[in-house]
Image (tube, rainbow, N blue to C red; front, side):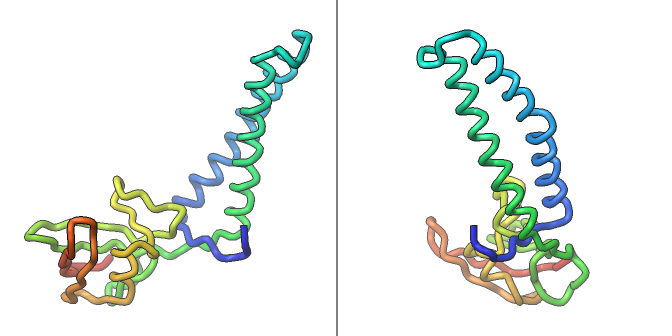
Length: 154
């Protein structure tokens, strides 16, 4: 990973820390125990359990390394606090085709379209940044251009 900042909400950072603690304190020790037990079963070249446990350990170690890098580069974004302009951490109510939708503008690592958390680097996120209540934005989507009107910013 390079030294760029990872923008994340306080809740998102808490989730990453929980995952890191779970992997380090619970899952990794369990898999190490499986590796040790499988190793004691004899011939490692034909031991499927040993291979599977080593592969899982490798995956866990890789994820722990990734999380540690993310945590080092994490910058907490303030949520809300400005009703004037859309920025990272804003919760934005939009009107699209007569329907209201609420989105949270978050960093890339927290983006989850199902939860209506959109990355500040996504087409909609980019179009929203810096905009104010009442402004209209047009976003190119797979179904064509979609026109949004900003109704409120929290």
